[in-house]
Length: 520
Image 1 (cartoon, rainbow, N blue to C red):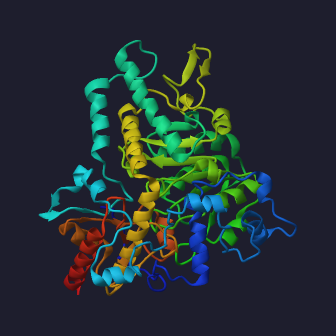
Image 2: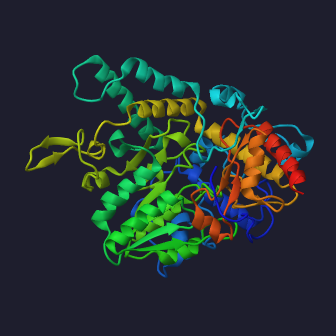
Image 3: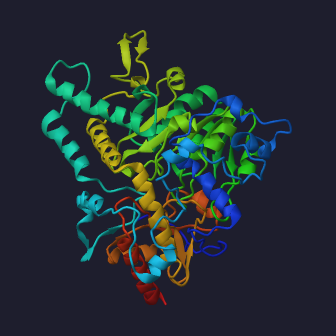
């Protein structure tokens, strides 16, 4: 369990926001803006000229140019055209209630679990969920840290070691051929899953952290110099902060940060003010791991490209929750971790536009990333192989392919539909616990349910829930700048995934009432 200093209760603002059917107008607009993360799954990439601001410039002018509306900066993008509306007719965005009853409040109060799609069959596919902890049935609500693995993923990893164990490429025997096929299946599965134009745009790495470090130490060293700027947001995980700090110290560049509101929404008008020709890199999380905020990446990417900046997107918390299309959002780099995608630990992927990968130098030397070696000179392989020195993560890639196959069989639209219902249900249920305050209340957020309680320290809450068989995270969640901007050092963070149910939420709420009585 993560450690932290202080009781984590801080001096945040306001009451928990209700993610339900009735928003005030500005919240509704921000919800639809957050929904770009879903709609980008089908939107075409925009040409640079499409985001050129009209005379007068500024954030509002650029926004009107991008979204086609003469409204304040918080206005949403235009609704999709009719054919796209039909395509997405069954896809409900986060923050919209889709249950068959009138409201999520009615569901909670009536005690009648209602689900947009029935996850019971999915839940049965995950062996680790069917165990007891401290004599209680396990309720796994630590999904933002790591997800459990379906049996098909476990079987794919076992099959590699039982039947196909070999190094990849170049060998003349059958096992090497099968191992190579298993490894390359992971690359192709990722490319198809996130909308890359080719498997050649996918580098297999250990996870999001390694992917961002790779970009920082190759593209960053090559393109960033003294006086240049790197723009990050207050929502970033440490993995999208520390590598850029290291690069800035090495090169003499400067890091600038997009602030956020007390609800966890980025201040986009301030983001626009930070952009200028000195900005070389913009680092964005697509979904905050600490607050659940969904960031309007397509819009922010278009704004950054207007100034010539390259955008690096941390997609670790996004790809397991809703459809993602990197070409549609026009991301330059996009990083994911397998273990947050129901796949193995120690494997992930970096998407990079082919032109960028081709121009970047390798960052590690050794076998596999070369074409020819002499003591005087080495000829490097082409991308993506030139970034994969040594024996790669073969079993991990096979397991990642199996995880993506599993999600494709369900359909990410169904995952999104179920989770947005469950987020609404959980938000309403947690609001009924006296002395509990939700942290991160941006409209359209996905299923991260961070909170603090005035009757118990955050770590003590986490320990109490563990004794009830409920696994949550309690700490700073590797997002200290984000929490400190809200006056906090720690939160309790239940987080949802496709296999969670209203029963899990009910168990959490019952345990919190019990903890409150114990702490009173």
